[in-house]
Length: 250
Image (cartoon, rainbow, N blue to C red; front, side, top):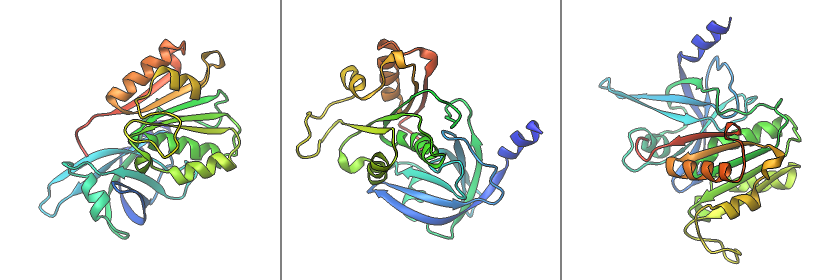
């Protein structure tokens, strides 16, 4: 039975774009109808394959943004200027279009509602996507596990899901969100722009004696820095899970 389930995740399925939501100037969410979708865990990803009329195909991996109990699969895609896949998904794809999707993939970087430890999420840029899936899963399950998100972006306009996060902070008990702006800060912001450091992470995160489950996602350099800061602050390395992406691809 387990082997059949694994093989099921390796099957390419046809996904149909049901809806598109613009998130920022460079990012959009694609809401997909995927027949026989086997379900997913918060934090998993999928492979997307595009095939041209001449038979040429290329594929990329994207984290799943939708909660595990959703009837659709949501992917938040950020445009990469020289990419092969992201420009199509962000600029061309429209409701009714179809492409292939395989997954879900990954079991290490996941959170389940049965986990009772406090959770610290640290996101850099589009690394927010699998962490947003965890936040949505928590909300869908009416979980009261305390969550804290530290979200690093270049400027306020680059923050994906900002409106939803503000609503969830207001309505979902036990969820806190702190922003780190690296280039431009909002008017009246109490700090100058700057990169994530140990002081900010210590203020917005959980102390190590709470033994939180830590999830860090973003560009490679950001992830390595954030993970090092957490370990230096006393967090057990085995409680710091990371997922990273490089500058190329798309």
